[in-house]
Image 1 (cartoon, rainbow, N blue to C red):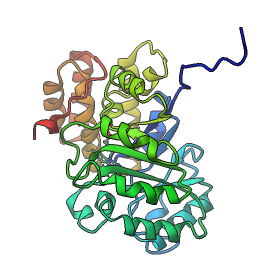
Image 2: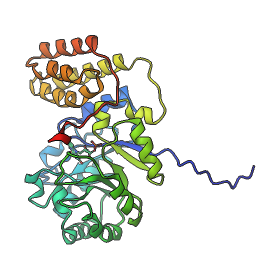
Image 3: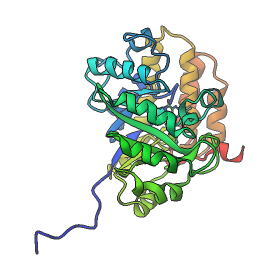
Image 4: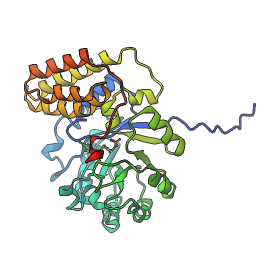
Length: 335
Ligand SMILES: Cc1cc2nc3c(=O)[nH]c(=O)nc-3n(C[C@H](O)[C@H](O)[C@H](O)COP(=O)(O)O)c2cc1C
């Protein structure tokens, strides 16, 4: 056989865990890595209001290298001010990070109205100005996470020449518009149509909820080498491992141990504050879809109002319901 054969089989892609404000904090990320692994990169939920080089909100465990694997973690900022982004990059570089990510995807109207997050997408000149200043003397590599547009799926076309002017570490595209929030379905074909117009093919994000969906997407975009998983991985934390062909013997007990570790560490860190319950419920709003009775799983979790009642509900769920995995059904589609 000749050594010159070029294989048609694409290399295994990079799989990352998307950031989720209120869910994927450092405690979640660390336990996720320990229990399920299989993600190559992780992103912090976004930071904002970096008013000083050593802003107080940067000082906690979220970025501290003692609590984070800085070889895999990429800190994210939501901002439309080059000076603030530079300040954030400067701080992250002192901690040893290699890249920061700019959030141009946040859809919430109060954010977008101020031309931040996905609200920046209709303004290519603004993006150009910010990137020009950032790349005058960057202290860190910069990647961007964006959407296809704010109002329309084709707004990104006007941004392509802007993005192509700069040495971005990466572009990750969530294949929705800002206006869609998280509703309806993602639009991988719109992504597919424009992906080859970028200097480097962007990473794909949006509605990968099952191995089967991943495989079909991979087939239509074999040249995409990074897929970011979001709600699919919150609903089924084994999804990345499955994509990588890894098997688990007892998924249910591993998941139960993960949830226990997450809950107890969050309680400890917040000095046993009940806000921890809120965070666990957020996660369960996704996880429930991977149990065979999502309605009753959610009913049990939703009504808990103390540490004890939460622990009892979790015990009940694990004894009464079966884990089926990869079950996320977007309830917001029907909104
Ligand atoms: C509650 C919530 C919080 C989120 N927080 C962030 C965030 O801080 N930064 C970000 O870039 N994306 C954030 N996202 C978007 C997700 O990372 C992801 O891009 C989105 O869910 C689409 O991927 P999916 O369809 O696979 O879930 C958030 C989404 C939700 C629902």
